[in-house]
Image 1 (tube, rainbow, N blue to C red):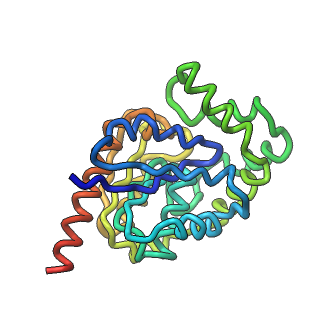
Image 2 (cartoon, rainbow, N blue to C red):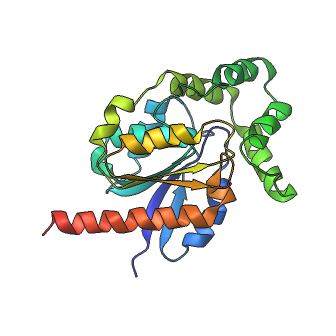
Length: 238
């Protein structure tokens, strides 16, 4: 059995370890390759990160993006549609209109960078408290992220709007969104799914990070996109 490889892009300040539970559910079927884009050298704008990640792909791949990683995934699909076979978009959107606290977060990163801020951002990303060991993994990763990376990517994402490009993204897609997401509403997730020509919306009981909180649901979404992508590829080559 062929194991598909999937590029997995985490959100701002979020360790690639956030995909570990998902990887365990997909073992033997899909192998997530997590992109540690925040501790890599800049620039860290959404287009720049998307371009660097595109250079890692040599064939059409499934791309999963969480939070800011979803914006990067969409940018990658817009710029290099030849490299994206399907999309799984988790807790994200094509723009940040209605993302009520982004300016406050940027301001606080600029003024109060440090462990207390890291902890506050991580806490708001999950609906329930994290186990101590996993929380420590996330905090240790956040401590290695340059403040400049967070400022640059959040400002870039705030100013980015890919809405007009979504109709061109005809690959299979699933949008996954948590009912307790503190950053975006279910309505905004539905807006994203409706704007993509071949997307489904899946609402889960989770916070901003269903890739960790409800990995079974996200794994099912990944397998669905893989299956639809393979079917589409066979039809194209009849």
